[in-house]
Image (cartoon, rainbow, N blue to C red; front, side, top):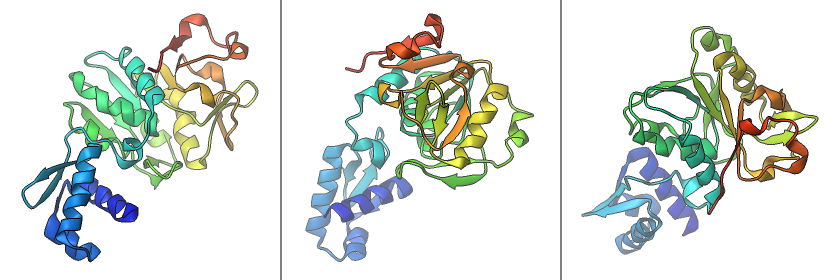
Length: 249
């Protein structure tokens, strides 16, 4: 049942609508079983049942996020929103925290959003923002979210500048700096200092002291750090005015 539910979730996000009869034939189970599956997904907040099937719920999270009891990431995204103003041009990075932030951007008007976050696209397109998706190789580092990254970042950094950039990170270390798991990700991160004057890094407290495979920047390259808790050892590295703390409730 878990595998079937997961497949129906994916279909809902891809097609926005499913029918009981089609799912019954696809999975070789009764229509009664499919109706129970859709009832389960409705309780999760993924589906909105209609006659003969279901629609993707208006405020549904991507499957990876729908199952996460992730108050910390959500709190980081809410804190990041406080730094955004109507009319801003922003870069939105990849990963689940950035997906949370994308869901909140419909409260703003006249935004221009440059992003490589493919998973966040459906939420971004629900806002009135002008959305620019970067091309390049598509991959995932968490088995949940997809992103793209060009091998030659100068193809866009030479012609694009945004007022603010919001990203997450795989690891933060005093010696190694900012690190990521995928070499594909390095192209974007290393270009950020020339892409924006204000880089906002959203990182929960578990990221401190972690080192991923690829180094992308020194910690001082970031203008603002949004976190739920800052270890004492890092307090002297960033100016106090650069650390934006939030509480995850």
